[in-house]
Image (cartoon, rainbow, N blue to C red; front, side, top):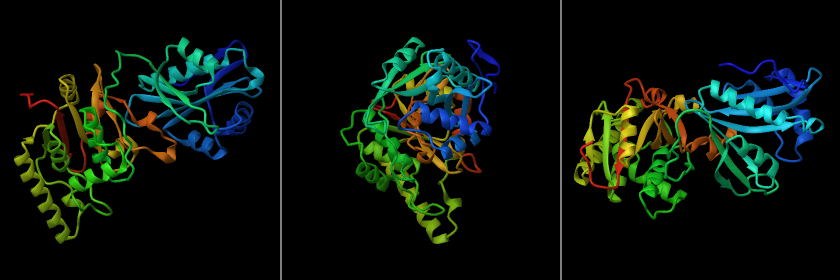
Amino acid sequence: MTTPSGAAIHGVSTMRPAALSDLEELLRIEKAAFVSDRISRRSFRRFLESNASAILVADTGAGLSGYVLLLLRRGTALARLYSIAVDPQRQGMGIGKVLIEAAESFAFEADRIVLRLEVRTDNTAARSLYVARGYRDCGHVAGYYEDGCDAIRMQKLLHGAHLGTGRAPYYSQTTEFTCGPACTMMALAHFGSSEPLETLTELTLWREATTIFLASGHGGCGPFGIANALARRGLAVEVRLQPDDLLFLNSVRDPEKRQVLALVQEGYRAEAEKLGVRRSDAPLAAAELAGLLAQGALIIVLISGYRMFGKKEPHWVLVHDADARHLIVHDPWLEHEQDESPADAANLPIPFAEFDLMARWGRTNVRAQIVIRKEPHSNA
């Protein structure tokens, strides 16, 4: 990955990656530029040390004149411009524009195709600058800032064809174990369900689809449990599973619990047959999933959480749109400790090759896909 180096800014500053030695200067600029919503010393240090973020600075040789902070979410083609600040004593020199250019260049070199940001609704100067650089509005967040000011969410396509955004609304899971129900809720809403996007619906669906036991804690949701919940609500559903075996048995050591887990899953499979849920032992590659999306389907896919957020655990995501090289995904999990918001987890553009790597789980490389259609099954 390349970083800006030695780029002159009207003879005033040069661009370079920040180092830990810049911490005091970053804090000085932060204090001078903002009266609220300031990044703390601890957070700056965390961002400087993280592989999932990058801070670029404008260096005058006698101090910093500004910085831009990027968040780079694992396994996606999305970057987020989390913060940008210019020393008030050096405003009007074009530093802000060059910081944005550096951020876009860095994101491009990191194989990101979309750069997103939030800007205050009352910051007309900044919004005008972003619009002039090709950013477009993609959302509105009420009360986003500490003083209660709303934010406009904007994004720019850095390269590639037009990026789809789909029509499925985004919903963030409210527990550690309800990624499957959260994806189910988003799919139901896309297809016109009137069930509210709230925690009670999430837990109701979890009770319908849970496999009861995992290695510890709450049970996870298997593909047939989720498929049955969708089929009961009038949707045409197909489960593609390889190997076509019972899931999660190896994670349960207690023989009695393992027997219960197997029995529950066998019951889901029997019910699925009665509900008309189709089955296949041939999961589709990312490019083939894009073809189904073009026909109006949505797909809930089991992935390894490791490639998304660094945890080796099964995790469901909703694939709801595609462009020529990427699947567009809603990930219901938010890393609140990493200051993530729905801007970091909704409409994630994931390259086909990366998606094919992450869409498998465990030692046996389980691949599970739940294809959802509103109309009767096609022959696809």
